Amino acid sequence: MRPRSLFAALLLTACPLLRGEDWPEFRGPTGQGTSTAIGLPTEWSATKNVAWKVPVPGAGWSSPAISGGQIFLTTGVPNASGGVSLRALALDVASGRALWETEVFSATEASVKPVHTKNSPASPTAIVEGDRIYLHFGHHGTACLDRAGKILWRNHSLRYDPLHGNGGSPALAGDRLVFNSDGTKDPCVVALEKATGEVAWKVPRGITVKSYFSFCTPLVISVNGRIQIITPGSGAVWALDPKDGREIWRVRYGEGYSVVPRPVFAHGLLFIATGFNRADLLAIRPDGEGDVTDTHVAWRTTKGAPLTPSVVVAGDELYGVADSGIATCWDAKTGTVHWQERLEGNYSASPIVAEGKIFFLSEEGVGTVVKAAQTFEKIATNKLEERALASYAVADGALFIRTAGHLYRIGRR
Image (cartoon, rainbow, N blue to C red):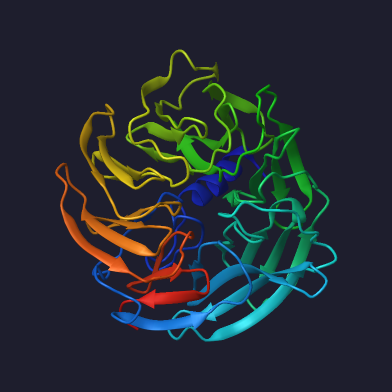
């Protein structure tokens, strides 16, 4: 492929041309929690404004991926011998009717190790492009299915030793499917050929830190016409070239580990959370080369920084919620705090923005809707009374919420 053609293909992946009602990956069409939907419901409960509610078998915290009238989820179904069958499910958007269920990795292939109480055998979210669904189960393997549930390829050669299970979802960069493999040692970033599942490149993190494990999802962006894969890990965030994985730049942030929030890119700045033990929130200019730690951090704050939920941008403001429930609105360009308020519950799911409203979802299943503005205004508090760690999806004018046992469609049919 000629360089110009490769660039065009990558740019289309970075800015997908999708129908407004599609939500094809973790955090939606842009991967950053932004929805163009109008008229989403702001009030609901376990019985109010529920178009349908269906049970989901097994255990999984992958968020819904929605495309072309189909919802795709992953789950792990245990068997009597203590193994777990890793499966993909497809449901109908309009009715919640089950369309198909495919075992991707069998119980004998997916040896179970202890996972964190906030994790599951199937936490990474699927990603959909055209007629293909890409599924990632961390150290268990990666696969591609068609829309009928047929397995097109599988790759389970990239074994590593995770801690607390798997978490980060994959991202698409042109002809590559990219994900982080940040286990207890030898952390790296991997790109597979999306057509075949063969390894295109595998790049070591090349950093020494006390704790190597992290759970972040890469973000693909374009900076001055150049595609970058933004991939935070323990100790630093890297920008990589999708062609060969070559490092473009990095910013170090000390001993931050167990990094979860997906990056966000707006106003020429990348917003990165640095993980445990103390969360920092960094705004980085992504136009440098090499180690730009001392030159390209526009602002940095600890106040209100999340450990687990991603942040979201609406207009000139950046919104986020700490795991403890403290929500914050910052000026995106300067880091100035406009407001900080406590929401009900604890938080792992990432918020979304739609039609000038920010939608938060607590681990206890409480959905809080606030106005996207420089002054705090709560619109509604909504309770499902079920545990919820997966993030919202938006499609067909409705919200989709995965809980410990169910998938809900909130709003009109």
